[in-house]
Image 1 (tube, one colour):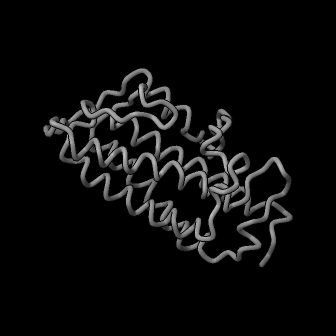
Image 2 (image 1 turned 180 degrees about the horizontal axis):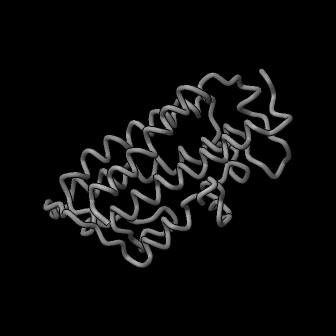
Length: 192
């Protein structure tokens, strides 16, 4: 794949998320944001708290690696590592915007296990995080997406190429935005 395709893919998903956050999710009441159809399902606030916790980790990891790298020669093409490809492909939605493979969130990133993650301003915080991700993308243009490595959130030892990590985060965001959309389509979702 080309580096340009990768950066455009991440930017497109992020811009779409921003539009959804502004146009749909920022208008919901606290009752709507806190509602869930059953105890095993996350509320909108919990979905966004989960995404915010990932953004907090990955955005700072991205910026730190971009700032400190000596690999300042961007390449026209990007090649995923086998681990990186597996990571982002596992997050990617299917053709019908369906989840192909379900995962349990790690405890540190799971709002049902860690309820203190959920704050009052989850939608606004995630909107801010999506703008931050666009800033990360701008900065990543000046480095090698293949040579810069980012430690993953569940293990500092395992590292992904920056390009793979960017795709992973974008597809993870997209996956949970779809989860949030699906929740609002539930027949018992509160009207106000």
